[in-house]
Amino acid sequence: MTDLASEPPDSPAASPGLTLVATPIGNLGDLSPRALAALRGADAVLCEDTRVTGALLARHGISATLLPLHEHNEDDQIPRVLERLRAGQRLALASDAGTPLVSDPGYRLVRAVIAAGLPLGAIPGPSAAVMALTLSGLPPHPFLFAGFLPARAGPRAAELARLRAAERAGLSATLVFYESPHRLGEALAAMAGALGGDRPAAVARELTKRFEEVRRASLAELAAHYAAAEARGEVVVVVGPAPEERTGEAELDRRLGEALAAGMSLRDAAAAVAAATGLPRRQVYARALEIGREPG
Ligand code: SAM
Image 1 (cartoon, protein in one colour):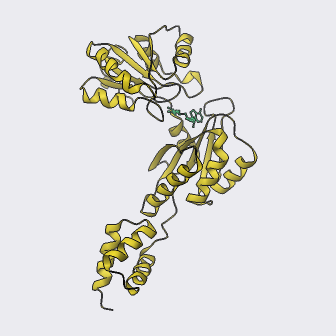
Image 2 (cartoon, helix red, strand yellow):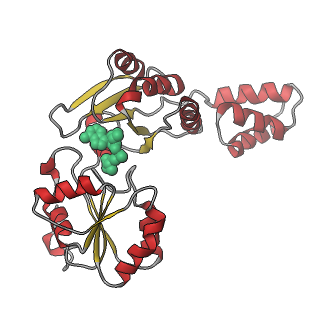
Image 3 (cartoon, rainbow, N blue to C red):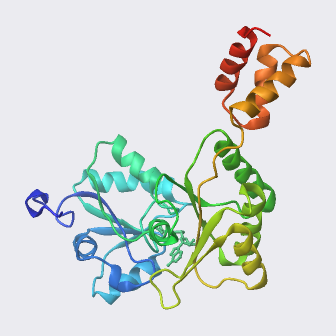
């Protein structure tokens, strides 16, 4: 329940420091009153694209000093931003859409502000990842936000293989990806291949906008759908957790038994089986030791 008495005496709009301000992901009605107050009260607004944030502010009659902060200038901007904060300025950080830092610039700046012991706050608000997760009908936690997969097929396959290895080693989480609409079909096909075509999934498109849509099906079905019809607009892919791991105890023992029977040392057998199953090497070695001690 909201506890009005526990609100800080100074709203972020009035206090010096850096405030991370979430902005709408489509529907402009989602800009909260507190976000608006923080933007209005800021001495300067750091933003990815000054045209995008400038247009948002103009709609609300705000003419703020806009300072660009993007992937390519973040490191250069940090000393200047810290200088302003040390001088007691109120700065806001907004991205083009949604929550700053979430697949958007700002992480390095936030680290620098914390390291410098300067005030830092946030106005929470929309984020496509959380909205898609809640609409997907898939287990909401634990979830792993993976951001964008690499655009090229090779690095994307490697990234998916890393996720799959983590699942084999015990990770059981709903996975959330951002994806470009042009690559959606091939990305879903790659996910189906690496993670399993029968995994339940959802594609959430154009959230909070006029053509909002959530399509729920298996990864293989979604891959087939978007291979035939290219998606339009902005997209989040949500994939349900991996099913119960196949490398159960019996399977582990069988693999270790085979490796040991082939004359491998305990250490080599454990290393080989850990690599093949994705299970942690320490766990496999501990089991290999037990098997070694058991009377044959
Ligand atoms: N910071 C943003 C957030 O908190 O959601 C994300 C920024 S990221 C650069 C942009 C990606 O977020 C898009 O490519 C898409 O995957 C996702 N996204 C943003 N808005 C969306 C929307 N309205 N519907 C679906 N996905 C969206």
